[in-house]
Amino acid sequence: MKILYLNGDDIEGGAAKAATRLLRGVHAQGVDARLYVQRKHGDDPLVDGPLSAFGKALGRVRPTLEQLVCGINPRKTNGPFCAAYLTDRLSALVDKTAPDIVHLHWVARMIRLETLARFNLPIVWTMHDSWAFTGGCYLPGDCTRYKESCGKCPVLRSSEEDDLSHQVWRRKQKAWKDLNLTIIAPSHWMAECARNSSLFREKRIVVIHNAIDIDIYKPVDKRTARDALKLPHDKKLILFGANQFMKDRNKGFHLLVQALDELAGSNFLNDSTELVIFGSSAPSPQQELGFKTHYIGWQSDDASLALLYAAADVFVLPSLQENLPYTVMEAMACGTPCVAFNQGGVPDMIDHKQNGYLARPIDDSGLAFGIKWVLEDEDRRKELSVRAVNKTQREFTTQKVANRYSALYWEILDSSL
Image (cartoon, rainbow, N blue to C red):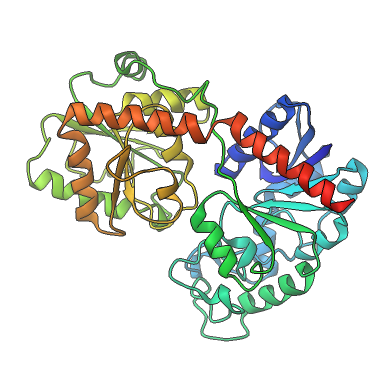
């Protein structure tokens, strides 16, 4: 069995983590698998990328070119949008590689919609956001027009029925209707969205969670972790982090600020608690968050990130809408209870008051209460920690996820004979 994975990147982002972890997992089982990416940053021998200087440069500028060609001004949109209009060379790559199955991960900015039909092979597609079944947006929020035919797109701030989102939806409908396609949803929420979509309601949709490497993401003595990071031993540490959270409103930093303000105003934990933020350097001027704040910056490797999770007492995810956020899974694997809104795929990981806390969406007071609930009772926090670790080891290990995918691949190949 030979599998070709496609993803935009090999390191940056949750889709890259999912793709590379699955790649290593199935390869360890003896599957002939490789990953091709548009932008290669690492040195994994199982990962390929453009070889020529032109190809590498094109991989970097393609997203910007895509926006220019399609007349999309990111400053005037209400979130990311991709029309997948530019041509690509992926059908030639597939012909040369000759896989049995092409497995897509996050490919919105590396592929033209019409290319998939040219593969003439079974396709498995893991949806890391909603782009595959919408007219071009990644996270539709409250919009459900993907159930019909898009148009009047709130992301494009459009009031036209036949806007770019409807045009992209029509292209997808035409190009993808006869594909031999199996959709993988990493969360039950994403599966339900796809089943309700006009593009995928007739397709096979399977829920398989993303994987985590529990040899890296595992509990570490808190004192040792804090020594390595130069964090205080005598404080409770609230951890928050996300890529570009200052720019991306979906990450919910504004709601975290309100929750922290409520906690600080009640004088709860003020002298005994500090805040740790990763994913961004300290802004200038720094925003007053009610607690002493440590800005760790971007953590590029798994070992450093695992140490950071292990050092914290609680991790907070204030996002408005997420599929299956790796930050929650990673924190839980390291024994750090999580507080988040009851939205998206988060309930697939957090069992309310069993291994963490789920607040009512988007209630910042509920978020504040959840943080207080976890931190005010150390014995309860330790019990939450044990259950969080147990759940990740029971359901999300690389081996378990790779086993499910391998079985699915063989099933698809057998049915194609």
